[in-house]
Image 1 (cartoon, rainbow, N blue to C red):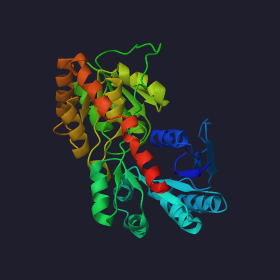
Image 2 (cartoon, rainbow, N blue to C red; image 1 turned 90 degrees about the vertical axis):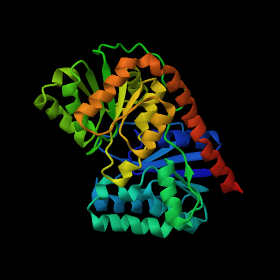
Image 3 (cartoon, helix red, strand yellow; image 1 turned 180 degrees about the vertical axis):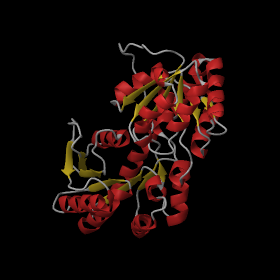
Image 4 (cartoon, rainbow, N blue to C red; image 1 turned 90 degrees about the horizontal axis):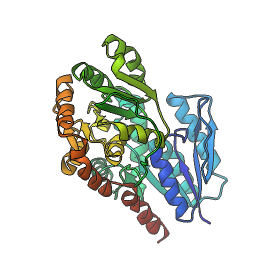
Length: 365
């Protein structure tokens, strides 16, 4: 059985794209090992394939990335490997070096426009290091995947290599009815995100709740702005109309999403990585049958307007967000039901993951 090592820089627990990718690879008859990091707060995980998590002394910054890359390199080097699947630029260097030494296949899955991420804005040295790694390796790659056409076009133009698009969509029929009790006041809005960091629209949403006095907001996730929300709801006097929950297992999150009358995706295009993003929550709302109010980012706007599954805001002002929400509420959730169902049949993991099969065929040829 051929062996595939899948590399990530996270703790394996909440990365749905990687989990789904590993399942497809396993169903293709490959022996999978998923390799990442372990945090003190990392819960136990159970998968049908092998998982390995490194406990590292450094938890962030340059020393963390150096330690992670060295551990991955020396872990991979003595092992039998037929293919390495590197997720994002922060795992690509050890994957590339080992693939050259051992002569095995390498697939690079870029989940974002990494060198234009918010964390690198204004940090010329750090950005330069990552960009140097990208420029050194990318032109030599034969199998590249990314999350949308905008980012794929940028990479094709910059490096002259083919880039496949595989959107991070849910699997069909993953949202099932449960006995979860809906005790929320309606109309119910939801804003979810595993990483609610700066410029993800949380602050703007909370200010819009001052306008939307008839609504209740469900805020689920983690991150800088999620933490700030706990204080801000009191300052804005909306604490009685906002429920803040930590990140939830995907199947639980999907139930909350289905309860909502409107799903919010208000990421701001302050960095090129955000500007060209296509947030997972757009598709989570779609598959849960929940119409969407979204920011006017190019990839997001295209999906919302061509599928007719919600409203695109004209700005991040509270009045504009409230106006878009109320347009959906006036029409009612049932107005969007058929279009949401049709969109979910177009944008789903069963369709998107066909790219993996194409790459596996090319790798074997």
